[in-house]
Each structure stands twice: as C-alpha cells, then as structure tokens.
Image (cartoon, rainbow, N blue to C red; front, top):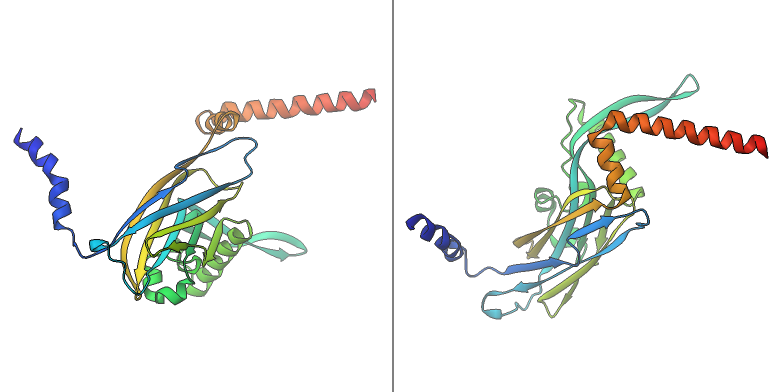
Length: 254
C-alpha cells in the first residue's frame, strides 16, 4: 500500500518541482494514425495547440513557435556515380547512421531570425542542422559533400521541407500549421516536436507521437516481404513468368 501511494503521488511531486514561472505548451495533431492504401496520394496534417503562460498573462513581446515533424530514422548508404570509360558506375560512397526518412520544419518566422546558429544546431532546427551521424571515416569535405547530396535528393522528392512563416499564432496563445505528407513518405513512427522561443531562448517544448502505416493489401504485401522473404521472392518470380507467358500468348493470337 505504501508503494502504491508513492506511485500515485509521484506525478504530483514532479509537477511541484517544475518551475512555475515558465510557459507550457499543449500541442495536438489532427491525425495520430495515418493509413496508406493503394489510392494514397498524400495527406495534410494539422498541428495545433495552445501556449499557457503563468497567471494567464501573455507577454507584450510575442514569442515564436517552431514545429518539427520527423521520422523514421534509418541507416542509409549514399553512392556517387561517375562516368568511367563511357559508363556510369558507382564510385565513392558514404554511410549515415541516423538519417530521418522525412523531415519538415515550420516556423512563425525564418529560423535565422528567431534563434542563433548554435541553438538551431543543438535542437536540429532546419535541414542544414540535421545530425546525420556519418559512419565512414572520410574527410570532412567528403562527408559534407555526401550530406549535401542526400539532403538535396530528399528535398527534390518532397521528403525534406522547410516552411518559414507557415505557423500562425492567434492572440499570442494559439498556434496552428499545416504540413503536407507526400505520397512517397516512408512508413514508421514519427515525432511532432513543438518549441516555444523568445529572445533567442527555447522556453518550452512538447512532443506528440504519430504513426504512418500501410493498410489493406499493401500492408499484407509488406508483411509478406518481411516475414517470408524466400516465399515472397518465389511467388513474385512465378507471377512475373505467368504474366509474361499470358502477354506472349495474347500477342501471338492478335
């Protein structure tokens, strides 16, 4: 009973130990579970919330909001193609241990006007501040070249996005922003991080979890490829041969 009482009182004790003069963020998202089906062409995610100031007093100088949606983290190898003897071939390569499959950052103003470069790097605010954790012991210039190549590729595919000025703040206490989820978004677990910034300092932060999953026939195919890879390969080859034979027979009759 004593242990149970301590367990029940723990949240109250933690709340009492937190600073009472700091604002608190209360964020939420329009969808916490996004399902991908065969007709999925993308989605629009609404991230919104409220800023609770001590005593309900909104400061005269308005604060800024930065929202980051990212995930899932993956290990990836980036290869550079070169033309050798008239043939394009893979040459140098670099491996990164923690590259997010999707990264979107939205802010009430451009990030460089809200915080300094050091703070932005600490919180990974901005595509240029992503910590990709290069695994290869290459030169700094080579690693930077591959980082820029990876970022540029994913930006062109709509997977790395920056939206300065997209966050709307109403009456200094309510905020909202729309972030587009592309059709080619990877499945997995995502985090939506919200930061409250004032005078170049991060005053508060909050996180919400989001899951993007395949559904229906796509989910079955993905599970089959992962759990029964050998059988999946055999069935795929057999299906390709069958379709090829059927197409050949059809054209011979025509």
